[in-house]
View 1 (cartoon, rainbow, N blue to C red):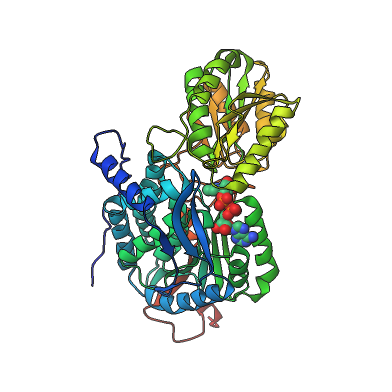
View 2: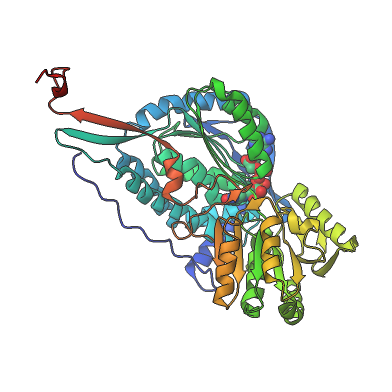
Length: 542
Ligand code: NAD
C-alpha cells in the first residue's frame, strides 16, 4: 500500500452515567448476572496457545466470600521462558508491519471495547476488583479506550519526528522497536493499566511478556481476549499470570530483556531495579526501566479555600474505589478556621457513604482487595484509635464477615509526622492535620518534606497568590498537581500521569513520552552522489 496515511481524529471516550432507565445500565446488570453465575477457567496464553498448568488458584470477589468466580492457572519460570521464545518469533513479523497496520489492531480494540466488550470488561472489573459501575466505567472502558486511541495518535507524532536534510543527502529516523522483549507487570487496581502496560509497547512493535496481578485476573484475561479479537497476532503479547518472583527471575536474567513496564508498589519496583542492576552485564542492550509506583497524595487547603469544594474533594479523592488509587488523597492539611466549620459536615458525609456489593448500584464504596490489604489497613485504624497522637473523626470500623469491608475513615493527626500522615496505606483512610491559619508557609514545607513520594497533590485556595506560592513551593512534591480539584481522575491526553521521587520514573502514561521508551531510533543518512576522492581542497599546494 502506498500513501501518506492519516489516522482517524481522536476524542476522549464519553463516560456512561448508568443512571436508571439507560440501556447501558440494563446491559451491565445483565453482564454482572451472567458472570456471577459462571465459573471461569483462565489459562495462560503463550504464542496464542492456551496453557493450563493445573496449578490453580481461585478468583475471589473481594466483597463476597461466597461468590465463586472460578479459577486461574499459575505459571512459573518455564512458562515465562516459553513466552520469551514466542515473542522472539512473533516480533520479527510484527515489527515488519507498517505502523498503521499495527495501529489498526488497537483502534479496533478501542472500538470493540466501546461497544460489545464494554459490559464484559466493566462487569469483570466490578466483580473481581470490587468497583462501582462508575469506577469500572472510567477505568476498564474509558481509560483503556483512550490509551489505545490516543496511543495511536502519540505514535504518529513520534514517527513524524524526522531530521533535516542538507543538499545531496536524505536523513531519516527509523523508530525501531526495542531489540528484545518488554516485561509488563501490572497492579490490581486499574484494568486499564494492565491493557496499557502490555499494549502500548506492542503498538510500537515490541514483543511482550505480560504478568498480570493475581488480584485482577478476570479483567486482565478479558483484556487479552479483546486484543486477540482485534487481530493482535499470536505471540506478540503473551499472557502469563503466576508466581511473581519466578517469572520475574526468568525475565530479568534473560539476555533479550529489553524493557520493564511496571506499575505497582515502590518496594517491588525497587527490587526489580536492583535485579536489573545486578544482571546489567548480561543483557544485549541497556533495558528501559519504566515504573509508576506508590504515592502519599495530599490536599493542602489555604484559609481562603471554599469549604464545600474542599469537603467534596476529600470525600471523592480519598474514598472512591476505597482509596485504592495510587493518586488517592491520603493526607490533608486544613487551617483551623476551616476545620471548625467543616469537621461535622465532613464526618457526617463520610459516615453516611453507602457501602456494599458493587452489583447494588446505590453503593459508593465497596470492599478492599484482599485479606492482606484488609489487615494492613485495619492495623493503621487500630493504632490510630489507641494513639494519643491521633483521633478517629469518622469511620474506624471494619468487618470481614461477608467481604473485606472497611468503613471510610478520617484520622485527625495531632502531629504532622504521625504514621498515617507518612505511609502509603492504600485503603479508605485519610489523615488530616489541622494547622494554625498563620502557618501557611511552614505547612507547605511540611507537605513537601513529609513523604518520600511525589505523585499527586492538590491545593485549595481562592487567593491567587497562595496558589502561586503552593505551585512554586511544591514543584517537586507532585508529578500531577491540581488547583481546586481532587488529586485523582487523570484523563489520558488531558493530564498525562506519573510522579517523581519514590513514585516512579515519571514517564507519563497516556502521553508520547511513554511511547518513546519502547523505540530505539536508527538514523539513516543517504548520500545521493558520494565523494570519489579522499583529498580535500585545503590539501592542494595552491
Ligand atoms: P504490587 O507491587 O503488590 O504488585 C504489582 C505487580 O507486581 C503485581 O503484578 C504483582 O504480582 C507483582 N509483584 C509482586 N511482588 C513481586 C515480586 N517480588 N517480584 C516481581 N513481581 C512482583 O502492587 P499492587 O498491590 O498490585 O498495586 C498497588 C500499588 O501500585 C500501590 O503502591 C499503588 O500506589 C501503585 N500504583 C501506582 C500507580 C501509578 O501510576 N503511580 C498506578 C496504580 C497503582
